[in-house]
Amino acid sequence: EAGVTQFPSHSVIEKGQTVTLRCDPISGHDNLYWYRRVMGKEIKFLLHFVKESKQDESGMPNNRFLAERTGGTYSTLKVQPAELEDSGVYFCASSQWNGVTGELFFGEGSRLTVL
Amino acid sequence: QKEVEQNSGPLSVPEGAIASLNCTYSDRGSQSFFWYRQYSGKSPELIMSIYSNGDKEDGRFTAQLNKASQYVSLLIRDSQPSDSATYLCAVLGYGGSQGNLIFGKGTKLSVKP
Image (cartoon, rainbow over all chains, first blue to last red; front, top):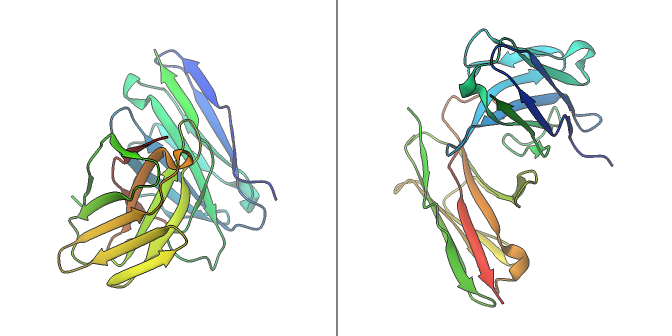
């Protein structure tokens, strides 16, 4: 069974540009989460989808970040326009709809570097 | 601000020894506690979860929870070089939605052959 896959693995862009990160969860997992780790800090929650609906977006830093999950399958996270402080590793995770809370399956992350 | 604190390490132990990793959390109402292991450049992987006070054993791993002291620990017995990784403590705070985990910065463990 394929795990959580993320694309791209690394993206380098200039300040002001747009980047879109993609996450494919484990097949059959209704819950999809985005997390972020900036340099020297802990991994922080961004948001949670249940199927195509946003269940909790309390961690989204500002309106430059837009997450979508059309059709309840894969998800995208767009940063527009990117700022220097957006640099970090963006992790996607998924879990079953009735999965035990907190037992998440993570992808390897998309590293974003904003110059 | 809910926080999870871990010693960043690195924690170095010889092969075969017991590695002890510690974590404290600030939210007294926290309900669920997790240890994730992350190899360099790889995805965090859940290795233990614990929900009630006491010990929980799984193979060479033992998680310990003391809610009164707001303390969680992970013991790794018979440590192997393959256990060398960063160990992340994560907590689901009171009122937190499913999957809204609060992570510590992680403790880097190095097991020397």
